[in-house]
Image (cartoon, rainbow over all chains, first blue to last red):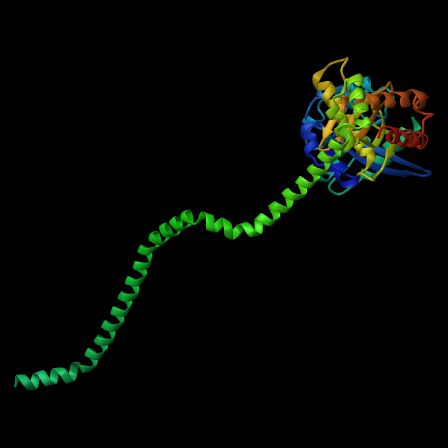
Length: 149
Length: 254
């Protein structure tokens, strides 16, 4: 889906990608300036390609916000999006969730529009880790929503 | 008539004969060269065998040739290690019949710790190098005590939490928890409290008594300083409380 690519370009990365395949998670840090506030976000980059129910529950607990990423070119990455989001919300009642469609550089605006209309949930941003489009905006928005909670 | 023909033949073919002689000479030279190369190749295995035999028979001479270089290094290392060991043995021998040593033996008997552990603890005393106060669920760092600048401590706190969660999930024991990680000469000792866990990174020799004392100390810190709600606690306050607490612990545990 490109979660790690999104994280890799724009965060302080200390640990290698191998942690994802061994622990199923890698920790990264992102600092966002929001007016008078400096928000230090500790990001849990959770290994993808699995149903959300297979992710250890302890990896969710304590999260103050969620960035849910799907690949706009791969229907398998968003066919269960409603069920996944319902599951996440059942674990994290108050945490704001940002739904991100990544790899927008690979499809046309028309196709994006069509996809957006077809999905059962609202997409916060369509991003491209390759070009950087909307990535900083995405982190700023999730940081703001967490501050407001 | 025949003589004339013969003479004519000689005159006409003289150049060709000279050319032929030159060619024959060249061929002979080339043949010699080839023969020489072939003989060299025949000699190769012989030379190999000879060298191998010589090496085997002259092992001692070879070692003697190399030893001055390696031997000096090895000797120096052994000497230094022996001197260190000798000093330590001397010190222990001096203490054996000292009052201090007799007292130590009684302490060892009383506390159920071996005398050897007590001696080792003195030689390599344990030191609490860093302490992290980390939220149980989110893995966010709420306070730190540190002698040195390691890599980003927020990320260390997150990874420790991920490792802890992973292991506790993997073994699925509701009553169990991770309480120690060993890495090289360091031990990371973990004490859980309700909202937080405290991770202390210790260098030196850690025996069971020290570990037990440290965990009690960590638990006491949590009871005294971490009972407010998460919104009321600040990193500055927690870190400020950690410093004198563990500076004192390090001073008294020596």
